[in-house]
Length: 133
Image 1 (tube, one colour):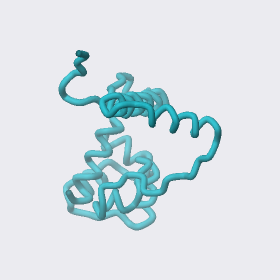
Image 2 (image 1 turned 120 degrees about the vertical axis):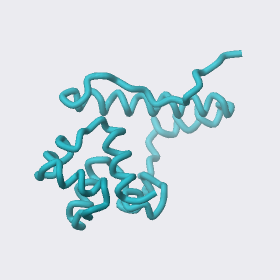
Image 3 (image 1 turned 90 degrees about the vertical axis):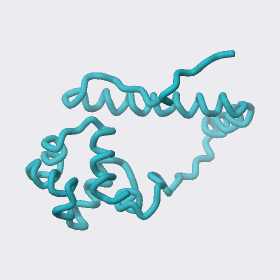
């Protein structure tokens, strides 16, 4: 994957148009269209802003690796330790389901904070629906 494809993917994940992303960066949609077509490349300062908008690392944005958030904040709070304890008790299918639920919560939070761009909530899930046995 190249930067142009990664930018387009991230923009669509956040349900942003080229116009809206351009506004967030203080320039026109043609700049975004040129980035996504590979005609132009953003400056380093604009790359930092883009990474911040999409909450990803610069390495992820530039396709150096596929790790969106390489820096994990160490959390030793009682609440997080309790989460770890419960997580360790789950079987693998339940851990997978929990991951999807956490993705749903993040998507819902992002949708609530950007209602002017996309009022419809889309949930992250596998193409196949969950089946209980």
